[in-house]
Image 1 (cartoon, helix red, strand yellow):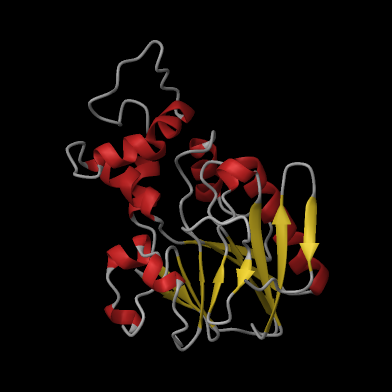
Image 2: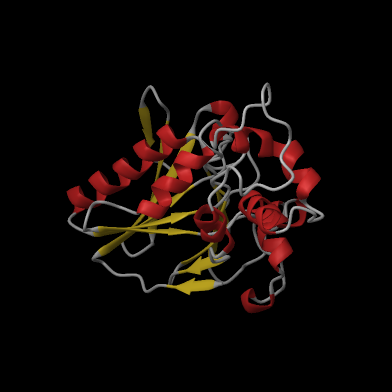
Length: 252
């Protein structure tokens, strides 16, 4: 459930915010990371912050892309689990799951349409396996909750202040908002997270870096690159029309 990595001058770490079915922006973001690492002469390690499905138009294509993995030999991808990924996979394996209604009402319909379900011609299915392959559900179910380097912790929603990383609840790591988002707590390492969309994101808050730019609504997907073994950062915002680099680190 937890991945640990060493930082190195030979590796550039990247993080990508919530995708929510926006596969074209994701492709551009991953290509940008690969080109950036190649230009710097490093290996690229991409941490994807969860919520690959729901709301946007192409959830199936996003999962296909992540399962296929990088084509470039100098790149590795390390997706972690978001609350929408957890809801989707949980309902696939247990249609009576208590999250079924929440999933359906918060993006599940768009996800199922990406798998070929048509609301004009198909009733709401009792089970998802008619449309969604088990490989996709198992991929999401098996994703780790967090990743950690020498300098950063990557998690979907955030961490509860004052609780050690190994004692954090799964619910908080996928769902927490207010208490974490208002916190000035020193978590020991900078926390890189998504989950809470804001037009100001990406944003460096000092103890935490917010990466959810609400791509399914705004069309903007955020990327951060950590240079100098994680001691400095660069933001990149990805759209279908252009990429706009922010050399400085935006502050709230």
